[in-house]
Image (cartoon, rainbow, N blue to C red; front, side, top):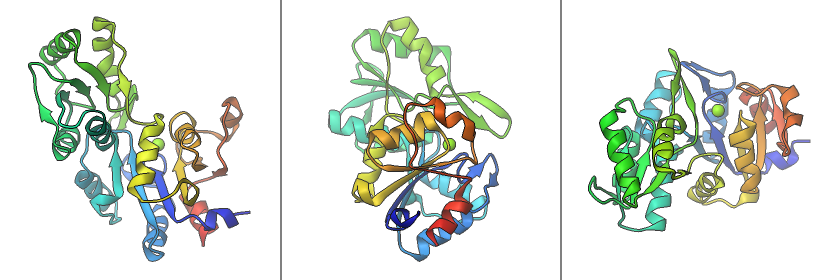
Length: 261
Ligand SMILES: [Mg+2]
């Protein structure tokens, strides 16, 4: 039953609800990463959050007890920087976000501009203020295009739910009448970029995630086989409510690791 799965050589995996949940590692995560390393398989961990840099994500996993090099992470901030540098090389942006976003933009040669930028880019941030909101609104009304790193309305933290990019950008959309374009999942752009980053072909690749409306739909739309794991937000009985279906459904990374063994 898992013969096709065993032939995959490139693994793209969501993190929250798959690898960890808050501050604890999920069963099978360490073994899964060990198997990928031992077999020299290509892999990338994807997150829709634009807050952390790949280095910070590597540090988070290391605190949880697993070592993964920074190049194995792909965030919505990196995808946003990829998108903007392809759409308009050498563009300038007014960005509201944290280190993950600022570093990603800088690495792609995108400059900061709070006078007449090509884009206003919003990501997760802890330094949201009326002043920045006011500036973003004025710049969008002046012709800057509005980009969100990811459409998530909320994000999980150790202390509970916090507002995420989708909620933070809503006041700018409402004030300007402009609709933001979002780069992160479920936009298949992020999945396709991840596949390219692994230098893999779609048929060699598998996407692992815990959400039907982001991970699985993005995989389906990018024409990559998908594994839905039930270790996160989705319950088995919810699957038939969606028009699309994952190729495999598993309890979590422990089951996937034994299927690959
Ligand atoms: Mg998840």
